[in-house]
Length: 140
Image 1 (tube, rainbow, N blue to C red):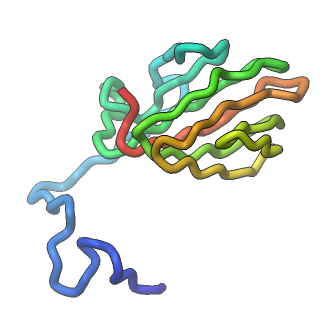
Image 2: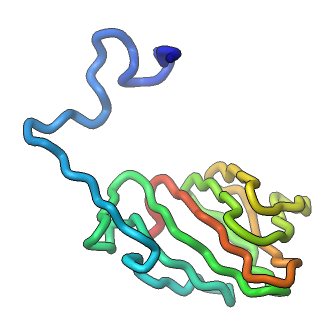
């Protein structure tokens, strides 16, 4: 396995950015059904916040995970955020509008959105487009 040394906290003898606690840390094992529904402004789609500070079953503090469901033939409103995001297309196909360019996406596609990147999603398919959205830091 390669050693990562060029990032803060990974250099030899450096302190990690998040200190290791003295007690054993317990994981959270959840499903989408354990998430909290959220309606995003300007979108007919629905999100389910699986990892998020507001979800007591998986209160993540450094990043958020949301499953976003966009109905067929629906386009989300153009948006940009201070959060860095990664979209992973779980199911379906469509087009992402990224900084003014239309980019086809389908099951298995990853899309990295740097902070403040303008983006929207157009579900051009016949089934609900399912997207795993990871944000860092978490969206409010």
